[in-house]
Image (tube, rainbow, N blue to C red; front, side, top):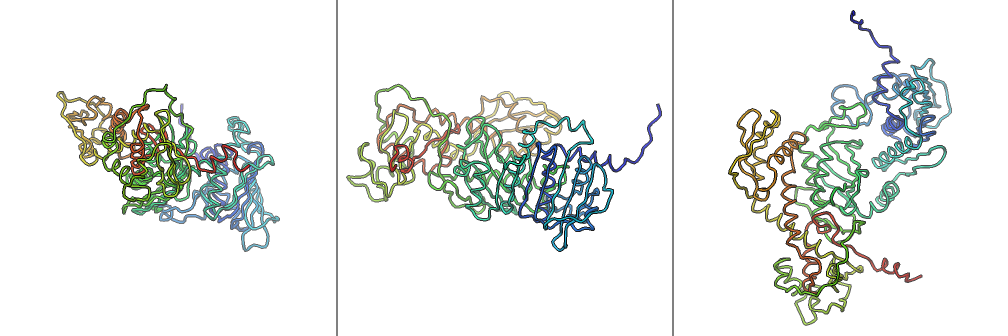
Amino acid sequence: MSARRIQQLPPQLVNQIAAGEIVERPASVAKELIENSLDANARRIDIEVELGGKRLLRIRDDGDGIPYDQLPLAVSRHATSKIRDLADLEKVRSLGFRGEALPSIGSVSRMLITSRARDAEHAWALRLEGRSPDADPEPAAHPVGTTIEVRDLFFNTPARRKFLRTDGTICRYIQELVKRMALSRFDVGFSLRHNGKPVVQAPAAESDPARDKRLSSLLGSAFVEQALRVDAEATGLRLSGWMALPTYSRSQADLQYLYINGRMVKDRVATHAIRRAYHDVLFKDRHPAYVLYLDIEPEQVDVNVHPTKHEVRFREGRLVYDFLFRTLKRALEQTRPEAPAIASVAPPAPRPEGVLSHSAGSSSALPQRPSPTTPMSLPLQEARMLYGESAGERAQQSGPAGSPATATDWSHRPAAEAPPAGAAPPLGYALAQLHGIYILAQNAEGLVLVDMHAAHERIVYERMKKQLQTDGVASQPLLVPVRVEVSLQEAGAAEEHAEAFSTLGFELDRVGPNVLLVRRVPVLLKDADAEQLVRDMLSDFLANGSSGRLQEAINHVLGDMGCRSSVRANRRLTVPEMNALLREMEQTPNSGQCNHGRPTWTALSIPELDRLFLRGR
């Protein structure tokens, strides 16, 4: 059989092939057109959809518009106003730049473009039906801006149309897209209508209250109420936005929005760094929730690695990874039992100021109430051993305003006697213990409930982590070195990151091209599977340039130790001992969650208590 001759593909087929990369579903069309509107300086974008976008997808904006003589050029391949040369491509600042969207969409639909430039007397319209335009633009009535109608998507490629899902499913994709776009540009108003009914209404939000209102309407008020506001800058990077408290974790990764220079992306390096920052405080297999904006110099990120521009590549991936991880981890560690719930986080360098926050309620199940047991007092000396001597002394020797201990010191009050609410610290002063599980305290706002075992578990855990950081990771030699057969890449990674392994208590020797010997392991992990742990760490190093696998394993062991050594349920504490625990919680990082991610405390304000009992009605 003779070889087939090489020939040039016809333009229409070229555009349809390009459409296969760019136009997956109506939401893909909406994304490209909305990005064009944003690049055209639009301040309002209205989207109308019929039958999920299969019949009609109309995007209207009030942007700069397209001049008459540039309309035919706008629908030709590789024609764009956003880049001129290689230097522009290396520092792309616009959302679109390939010049393929309009011709690709026009090749698989019936498309009408109506646009009026700001200095034009009237608008012009250009029509495409599955091919290049056959006629010149015609005069039309239209305000300044552009409207693009896409009808009968995939009408000339029926095989593609068969793969489209139901109208409701397709519309949900578009709704999620508009939500993501609305979260990326608070200064632009967005609206979405499906079959004539409003689905999304997001007016422009310039002020902080307006932004919070938009967040509440798009993501729910609970996210705003239980989020930390992040704003940090270092080494040419800036991270801003909102990160939810661990108690607002999700069963799925459905509330995670990351924007790089205003572009919504799904980046593996950044996602792994964020996930690792939450690792120590999340409950089981829960997922964090966040809306984060990373600003980086355009020449430090390559956005030209995927046709849909969903993926990026960082020039200094390790720098970005460390910045994200350390900034978010520091923000979580510095949350304290203080108001307000939304606060700012300082940059990782120089040393940041404290972050103000409070732990809100959670839907996570609390422990079952145990059967009554005989009260057992915990001596104050034991409380000092468990909670730290300084905490015990503070609880016994200082009053609510820092005054010297007196006969009426709060730590010596009877459990039934409530101290005045005016000068109480964030977690207040203990009133009583409930069923040997919960501490009831009163602060300036109302009532505080503390799970004493979960709270002390976190205190002990953080204390052991701090001691480990100070003294380093102790390691021990293996009587019989563990042989690990690896790939050439993994062996190279082991040599490249030998110092990191050594710092974490491992000693590895490369004794062959594909063979490693594990000679020393951390004492805390002496019973772990050394071979599997090394393989996992090497995989992380190859994928992300760093690994938190070993630290996570050590933290898991410390967490178990902290759980076993913490004060147990049904242990009756005296008022001074309960106050010592509360004061220690106020000084402990991540004290809003136990080692397993469960909440350690919650609060009810006086207005909330009044509503429970219908007071004032």
